[in-house]
Length: 236
Ligand code: SF4
Ligand code: SF4
Image: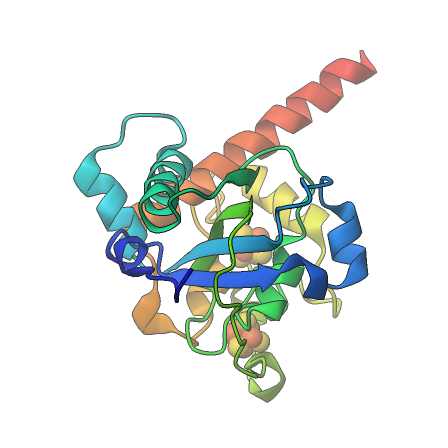
């Protein structure tokens, strides 16, 4: 198989791609993956950067409760069939398999930790995400990750920390409970966004559209409320 042609995915906004040989992944990460058939030698990681994916999803039409996942799976499945004929894949993500996406993102040169725990890319800022991970029996050229440095150690005024209305990073680490507690408040300014994320200047040109930010944070708040209600019910 010759070099991978990801242009169809680029056009769909699935514009971050990395290929790993399973044999070269860190043992800890590899051992947590479901045991693949012997012929499955590679892991293909697909992400999105910037607003292009959301715009492509909207152009096709919002048809389900998980329009970004459904769109991503559909386009990656179509890409694999067209560009890897005769090969087979098994989708790890989205799905129930334990996949350490953040470590894969670090290996791909995409992901550095940020004070508010959303991964930050040296050029794209926090405006990227993981969309699909596949195991495959392919022999695509593995990605050579560029050496990138986190922008956070050089960020002296840390506007993300001061912008957070819950002071969730004021103690020097991220207080998830403070963030969630604030997000659940009536009238919260973080019900459908993250003010810390918006305050970060890195990659501002790649910021998601407001509608995408609203969609993502509305979904995450629904999940928070669902699990809070579920936990309360289990205590009864
Ligand atoms: S505002 Fe500064 S410290 Fe915060 S995420 Fe952005 S670069 Fe990192
Ligand atoms: S969502 Fe709001 S409360 Fe949570 S980290 Fe972001 S700015 Fe802070």
